[in-house]
Image (tube, rainbow, N blue to C red; front, side, top):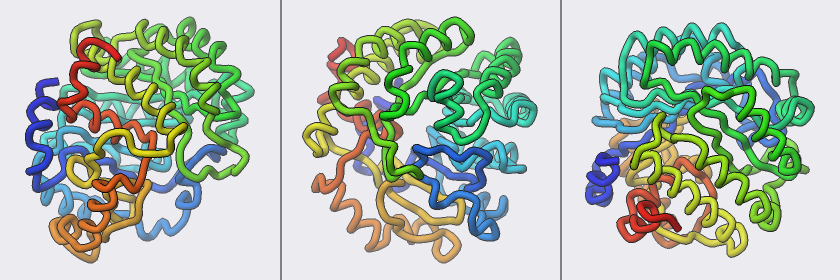
Length: 351
């Protein structure tokens, strides 16, 4: 928490981002109907960044506090462990967020074990995607993988015995196709996966593979909200029920309410720090201020500094500052709230 307080006063003077979202691969072994990244999956594999290119990029960044690895399915990248080590050594990362569909149980276990033993950071988060009861989850994911998620959970729990910094979380993407089974899913996770540290819920965003998939209505979100809030109160966000976890859960509640308001009013409710605090690196070297916006350059063609300070980047920053966009993207919104001193009373005392 002290890091967020510290950087909240420096956000406007940062020369480089301190929060990086990195799509390490566009390969995926699922076919998720709600995926906003589906038009990038399993194409142009020759364009994927090499370990050497990632290392060169990493050395240009300086300190990275938060690294969110994404994909595709991150664990399909053979050198995932080496990428982790690069960012630990070059950028002294403190918090890693690593999502997975949980399909490759043994691969996930072995890679996670290697990374946990190789470098120790403050918070090593592995987030298992679980979008409904068995039939609904498999329907959404496009493959039969519900049981794999549970098997992966059981294997990862073994690692928690020796690694107190390992946090195992579940993430559920809310859509019009699973909102009706959320109560049953919450019950299942609570009973069958008692060792998880948190059960998160994200609202579907972007343009999905299947256009019939939509975010839940604001009425549906209001209806399910009390149960989601009660679920969050059951868990300790950072592994133990302390002030830091309480603040994090207050932030989650505040943001959920703000997402509903954003969807209703279709506007940016508070300043966004994409392009100041955050950066996004795609598998092929493309750089974005926000993954929902246009690319501003490519690190294969220019240095990161040149891309980050380019005219394209400044044009997009102005659009964000002028509130020409709005979203419910939690990676950005969590920081937008915690870096905004005006909102701190809501985080400490509740909304």
